[in-house]
Image (cartoon, rainbow, N blue to C red; front, side, top):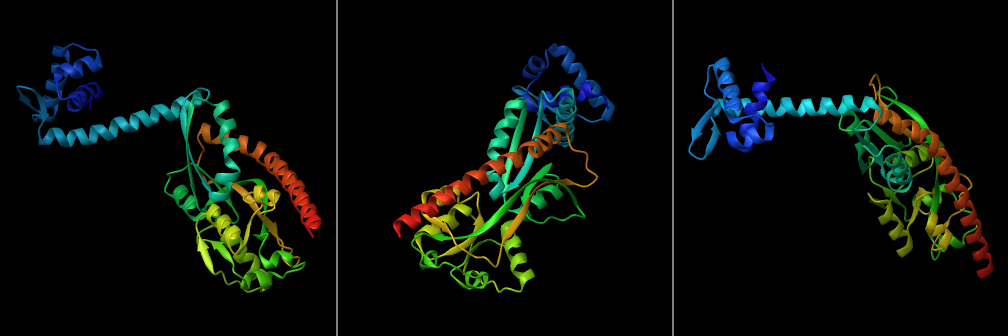
Length: 319
């Protein structure tokens, strides 16, 4: 098929007239009319009804227009993909991140990435770990950022940091005055957890199961921010990432509960599909993430440790 003919045909379909299409393509009206006539002769069908006020595609024309839309969309995608190899001056990066990383760790990385590669547009979806993996499998996203375990048979991964889940409650919660708690007591308390499919929930469930502890969450919530609100408003307790409650620990509105018989840590991973060649924009992001995530996490953890120590000092002073 002659793509010059097809481009002329599709321009008329989109604009509705030979005049507008010729202006879009910067060719004369007779030349454009000739291209369409040759295309009709090639197929042996009439592609347009010539009306007094424009051109309307026939049934055959509408059928061809559907294919033309797909062809030119693919052509644009191919052009974008290939142009990335010319120094990342153009391109697109689609990624997905689980909520803890997406909300509390990812933003500074995205900010630096955009400064380094201003020509790359970025689409970052923030969801739970299960949905991140699903988006990778359906090719909707090139890379994913998740906490906790992943399907090693399907994905390759780069370790980009470590995180700790700690038991947290409101400073007014009676448990905050207990000097030593057990994981079993937390598991049987007013425990609020993330929704099924969350990487955070999987890590907590695995940690309890490995030690033979019982876990009976009273409430499941899909938002870390909502969990924090529940903690501050009532008698709920939660195993939650240090990153999420850093400000509240520093302010003293939430406190870390002492649970010496259980320490929950997890990996932060950047994942991509096995045997899949990452685009230049995705490779650049992976490089930046592996170089900077651990540095950022170390800084945050040092800051959190200082904040927790300060909060503990304030608590002793109040006592």
